[in-house]
Structure formats: structure tokens, C-alpha cells
Length: 202
Image 1: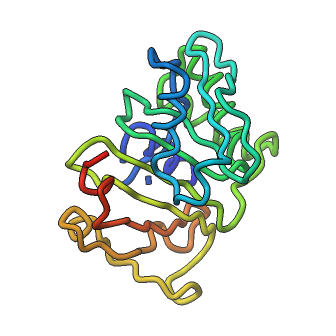
Image 2: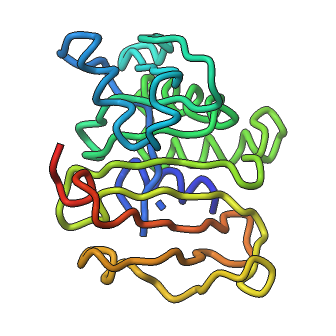
């Protein structure tokens, strides 16, 4: 559910949708990695965001820039073809995902590990309203997508339609919609249209 959503962002699909996963160390200058990593964010969050990568062999967190605000970003994940930022409340989840991937776990095993950690309480649940900001480098997907976690929310409770806007968003006409309504993995998909980034321009 929530993890499926998150892993979907990794494998592609968080959130039909994908979840994001830890990125591997990139062969780019640090400053360029930082510049690229914060692209999905609103302008007012970019300058003070933390930027991290993960060592693919150990899963160790590597801080490229220590920020002072509430969000963290990772440079583009070449496997998922997306750049991801998220609320710092989700950082422990990405730390665990990185360790599991470094151990050679398959995507399904990583997902199972996250679910188990949530069930035992060693991994805290995502905070209601926590955000993810995604830039997909693939024209077949919504290129610029913001996602709000709203565990348990229903359309009646939050006033958001459950009708998918994916196809409309790909045409530059998308509006928010609620996925997995009423479940722990409920989240609001917010396509950001008609900007240079959402149109594939840097």
C-alpha cells in the first residue's frame, strides 16, 4: 500500500504510479548533482533542501548538501528514470530501502522489508500530508508530479475526485485526484502542467 506506492515510484509507477528509491552515486560534479536533484521542488524550497545519495554497495547515506528546511532530494535514479524529493519524515524509509538494495534484495524483497518494518514499529508510518516531488525523465509518464500522502482519506473526507487524470495530465490538462482511497496508502496525485519542466525542458 504505502510502500507499494513508494516502491512504485522506484520501479515506476507512485504512485500508477511509482515510488522512489535510493539513488546510486552519480558520475557528475557535486554541484551539478545538487542543481539537478532539487529541480522537482517549488522555487521557495530549492535553496535550503538537503541533497543525499546512497552508496550502492553499502547503502550508506552520503550528504552532498546539508539543508535547513523540511525536504530532502536525491539526484536522478537511472533505473527509475526520475528525480525525487520528499518530506524529511520519509528519510528513514529511504535509508532502509538503500540498505536492503545494497544487500542484493529484489524490488519485491525490499517492499516486503519495508512492510515488515512498519508492522513491527521500527519504521514510523508516513505523516499525514507528507509530500513527494517527482520529476520523471520519460514522456510516457507525468513528467512533473507532486504527491501528498493522506492515509485513510476518502473522496468525501478530502473533497478530491478519484477519477484518474493521468491521460489528461500527459496532454497538459491534468488535475489532482485521489488514489487508493480509504486505505493506508491513500495519496493525492497532483500533476504540475504547463511549465518548462513538465514539458521536458530544463
